[in-house]
Image (tube, rainbow, N blue to C red; front, top):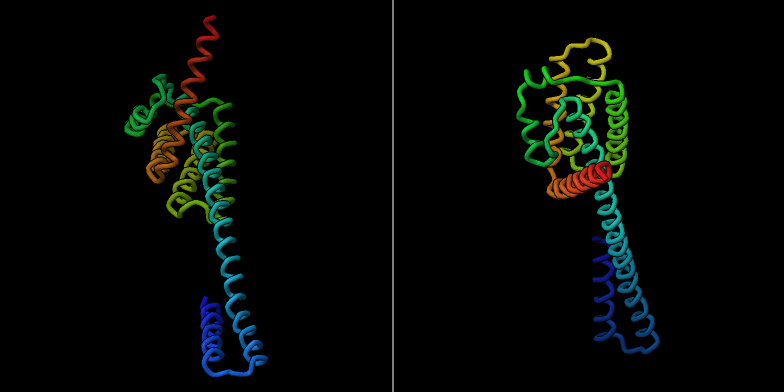
Length: 218
């Protein structure tokens, strides 16, 4: 930016000097051309930089929306699996999600029952979240707090999978379930836009469930 300002200032100074002190038309035209170049070149580059900034800003906004939407879809699926693991039948809303977050460790332990398919699905979503973190880190899309929440969620999901496969301690597994629910709530609290989109996903999921139920009755 400083070189641009110096070039513009130099062009203005040359114009003033020519106007007041140079009386030879040929020399005056030469200096005026130089002054015009000093003014025009930085203005062209400034315009280019501004245009590039606008394009980059719009691209970053689009990528942020894409990453946020993708993350919300993954987290919605993780919540659905978690509800299946805990045999929760209530309608999925922000209220019932917060109620899940308030469940005691003892209650989670007593209700917890994981099938092989649920475990495989959790592993798939864990890998997809890892891809989200890698992509957002390379492009500086998510905030450090959001990345911390997602990496913490990945860790708890991985620990839950390992605990179920190797040690089979239900209370420890329940602690990881509790952490997973808490991390998802933290994610929604970290971004109002993410929370709004998640609510849209909840509404769509509920509408799909109602449609499926009506079709089965017909």
